[in-house]
Length: 141
Image 1: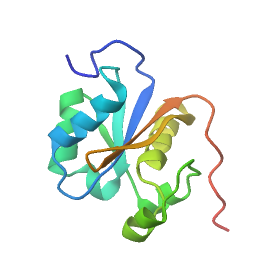
Image 2 (image 1 turned 120 degrees about the vertical axis):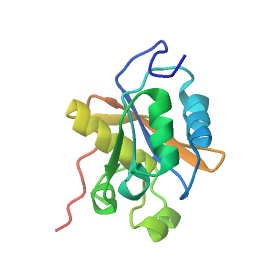
Image 3 (image 1 turned 30 degrees about the vertical axis):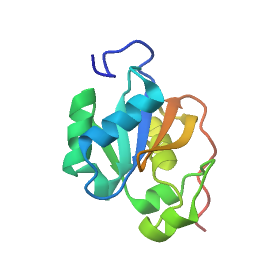
Image 4 (image 1 turned 135 degrees about the horizontal axis):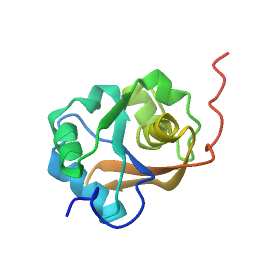
């Protein structure tokens, strides 16, 4: 049974932060470690990872789309757990949490983190749900 067929709500979106070339099995295992068999609406990540084979295959396993967001778009999202190391590496202080919130906003019109970033086997997972927005984007002015 895939997570998209499992019990639970379909109001969850998963943000994924991973290294280049991360395989589908690693991503799928990380999502299942965090959510079990709960249904999800999409995987979301930074745009440069969205088209990678592992991400695409993981999304296919869950029978959901992958949403990719530019680093600048992710950097504008207020997150509970920003990281300077990821900012130095990819230009945003958050991939998993910011992508999860961004995907929830795109799908539901608003979103909030329900599972903060959790790292499993080098892959970071965060989960957002539709509903009240976490916080307004930071002003870039």
